[in-house]
Length: 212
Image: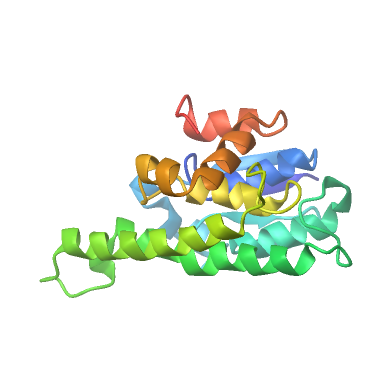
């Protein structure tokens, strides 16, 4: 039995698919078309009642959601892939802190940016709402930029699953020109991830020829 991943190209499922590629694990991909609202069909809601992607079914039949939880579970299942620093490694606590920062403080705001009127009264200006949310997202990315390693190729001293999260999530909402100017280390992390040999085919499936 192989892993089964529910996701969609150009979505957060990239980081899970890339982690599986890094671990050398085969995966059965099931694309959920968000433009057709397939994430709210009964069949998928039985997998994730929140109606969000990604979701991953493990080889033992267990299915879990929430990207950070999936990445941590994969790091435990495949320690040789070095998706997260080992428990006794100096980077471990920093890794946990920044993975949760990206997953909890930034990732949820993407939904608010994309669908502002889900979170505000109908009379709210969606343009003004997006502007304020973008400002907050940028503030939180700057903190990650400041924490990134001096070399700028990875967040920590070496590759980790956090770099996958940075690569995909920092592609959204903040603007490529702003990221290149204000967060050059995050831009470099994205570039490094996108051409990493094990991950490049996954990047291409999700983003095509879009530059990192």
